[in-house]
Length: 474
Image 1: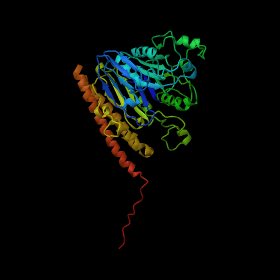
Image 2 (image 1 turned 45 degrees about the vertical axis):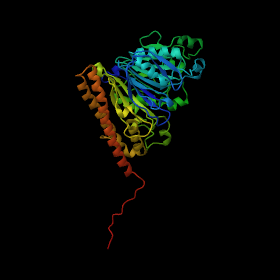
Image 3 (image 1 turned 60 degrees about the vertical axis):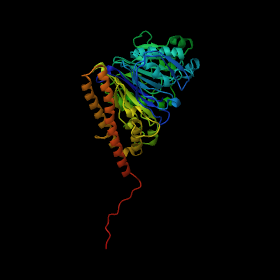
Image 4 (image 1 turned 90 degrees about the vertical axis):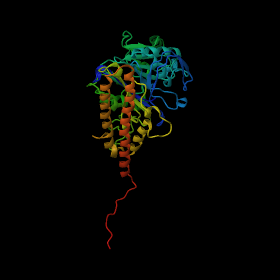
């Protein structure tokens, strides 16, 4: 998937949460997805990839976990993409990335290896920490190889890890410093790897020998993974680096050029970041710059120069938050946006639950505005043709998005207060009902917004003419 990822360490977040988040951009606009909870399973299973044909035996005792798969998985592949498991470990997979011809010539991708379609389902139910996720996936890549270049984020209440696999078998991973954030956009992004610090870095067996034996390192004083394995070309500078530039600038880092290939992987923000800051980045389109494709007062060449973060072909977007200021039973929240993100809000779903909401779980291929996926697309289809005339309905003082943000924050506050009185099965049952009820409230607001957009759009019709109000004279 051609995605954008945002990572936030717990000391960089205003509430002490870890956050991993990503826009999941599909190849076409409408490939329906759903958001479900997969129950725990004690027996062994086999995962079959409809993309690569690989069958992967899975261990027994799979944990309960969330995922957002394609509805028609036998055609498109499963692509579980995101979720939090029952031990409050989160995973987002994947950020597509590309190795350079030199490294791929020596360690090609494996046609029947592990691909993005399989990753969440074969890893998230079996890991117990973010670090464990990297180690577990690393062993699978060593055994089966990688079908494509992928970046994978893992988090728990303490740590955020980002792992990059640009070739068939070689990978590295870095633990994000607690006081830092990162923005990643379809490139190999990790930089200097310290092989003497196994607390902050992990890597594939033999990677140093592979690089040294094949004379792949252009630097004499560091092992810069981006320089060795990544790309730096004109496509990167119109498709990838501008997104990192915008995200870093909004989150409080000095990033001077949208076409630089030397933008830092991680940075210390100039403030404590909120979950809404992450959502803003993932919903952005170079807002308030000359590069905004939705603007109407800048040169067209500037508006179409760079690929924006928010895209019409986004299948879903997620912000996976593991909180440290509440009990473990309510710590994990997946904020889901069925996209396009520029026009739709993030809706919270507690991880310690047996379900999400019927309108999210039962997406169909046929258009149905009562389903959350298709309702989100209805909002986008109505507002985008007349965006500048109707954006006040979206983002004005009493617009749809700020109203939805206020509502979801209130719902989380109220749900937390009730949930803290419960434990065990009663807590899980309560959160399952709360997920559905909270989603219903946001869906009601969305339907109301659709009505307002329809009414306003008709007033902008070109099939109009001033009415002659002169009275006939007798």
